[in-house]
Length: 282
Image (tube, rainbow, N blue to C red; front, side):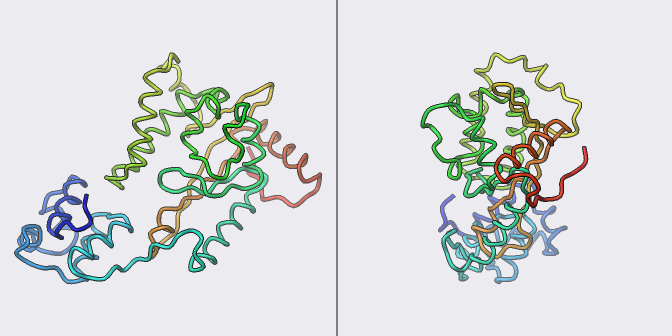
């Protein structure tokens, strides 16, 4: 979608993308259906407040809200700072503290297309042991967290439940795309996962069999086994598009053996008795 599209065209685009009628939006936003019709047709011009209310009603992502404001003739409200900006220094400093405090368990900082920008020491040490040989991944702090799971030189050969895990990721990405709508990075990941799943000879029905409450990442290599589940954290009420797209993915052990494995891994790096994050009882 071009940034310079008229406000009415963009409003109609987001309404239809959400599967809503003008009546639906009117009931939620507080504006009349007639007024919404006039806005979409260009017969009426919105105020700045109207743009923001409708963007909130339609769940328009922060970055795309600036395009709506521009189309309506208003200055952008949200900043779009690079991660290297001093403006984000305090926020990113807090992120790195969260990553470090999650030790002895892994944690990553990713964007909405799963590009990795940072990871804690545990994640680096752990996943480096399960990445295939060679020079394909000399560093893990700038990889795509999904693509490395699709790569035979990455984690793919060592994910015991690869088919079931990737089906879970596929569902998550499809949900994300329904919110983001036109995000090319997410759409490309979905296409690549679907292609890989179609080419897989795994028992697709068996891959769904798991009595754990959430999809797990089950890694196995040379006698090492670890089973993990994840939680995602985002910023509340972001006013910067870059910050709005960041996610902290924290990994937690899915069983007692995996917890013990991660604790032992931490001790091998830092020594016994070093300070650790609180560990859940499993």
